[in-house]
Length: 586
Image (cartoon, rainbow, N blue to C red; front, side):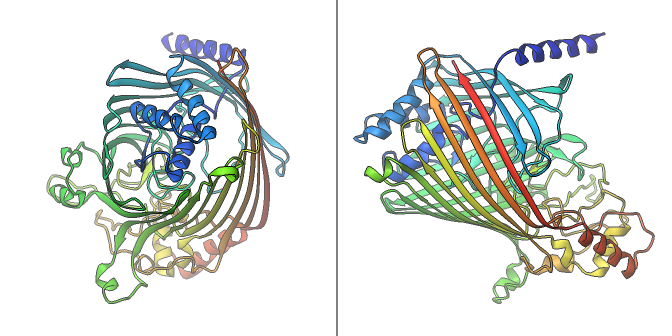
């Protein structure tokens, strides 16, 4: 009886939402990383209108407020006016009603389409001088069609997987809140929201801004010459098939930035992925590579170094290397054909000023390299005697670089690289045009493994291992007693894009958005986006050697599964994704 009442309540909420024009992608609170705040903050940093900014986001309410006030007082009238509009939204009403209707379709796949609605409220509430809350409380409604999305790109995330069904539609709660305590220089943030850590607006190799939201507590110290952040994230673990969700997975993250010169900054950052327990050692501002010794070195540590250059006003150059695992013994011998589980991000942002800047708002170009096996990690389980205990195919992986079944860092698979270019224009006030081009190469590392290694995967139970080349494919496999065997021979070499069958993805994106500001509304936005996609060898990202529980796996068996994988690869795939929408805020 109680379950029926709850379901009826869900349907009533959905019916109310369907009777109201509602919204999705253009929420404009300071905790929304796709809002107008963060691209403008990046532009203003390049132009020298604000000091060098922290790279971990979202920012506290107090830092956002301070940045907007600073730009409002600058000599650039265009940017000052833009900041004034955002400041009015930040400090105006404490509650806005917000909504959008969106239609998504693929013109190349029999015009498959999906309708999406949102209805909700949002706002920012200063509680007293040193505390504020930012919130977005929405109900996301979409039809039940199975719409595809461009490959290796972020998909819409943030809704709870507990839908209420209403005819052809389903509805999910989609809510984020962040409380800020402190000042613009020193603050503590706590809440449920999406997070990001990257010098670039569109690309990342550490924390992807479009990842499913997570609970977190963050400490931020931001001074003119130094920045330090310390954050603990509560993540969701899954098994290999993403069929079960598990609690008690955590990521501890901290970063330190030295702003050494007006034109140069140096960053160091670490994170630790672990689970099944809560570890106080990872809350402390000590190197995680030292802290992990207290737990037997069983957790998953990554570290990175970033360089930031500002050679000219409006120009920012960045270089990041993110390290998971290295065979240092071979590297000191200058042997680079060895274990190199790394990621690289090289980027540039150009924000012109003056007359040119009145139309051309931003150019971002980047190159991303994701080496084989980075972000993957086998699940180490030990009993009280220190013996390895195999978790089985249904067990949670608390140590791979994932949250809710998605890679935390990037939608790219390991063994991929990407060139990305995005140009942002505003030819007239309130009209924004974004043009983007990207080129991705990807190889499935399973195509490089030996016949013996492939046979081990085929003899395993289905779902025990993954051979699709994603972050789920770790380089080890266990023996019958649960002890982890040696790494595969393939994982001890740097076989980056050396496979016989490579996948190529070309994307062209055009987005046009116009914002109306009528008297009785905060804003009305109308937008159209088109993404044209061409894929050469679509299907490389599929699994090659799924577990079959074979007692023996011959070379012929291995060749048969390899041939099946090759035969299912589509040589040429074309997609044309079109999005049309309107959002309202009042």
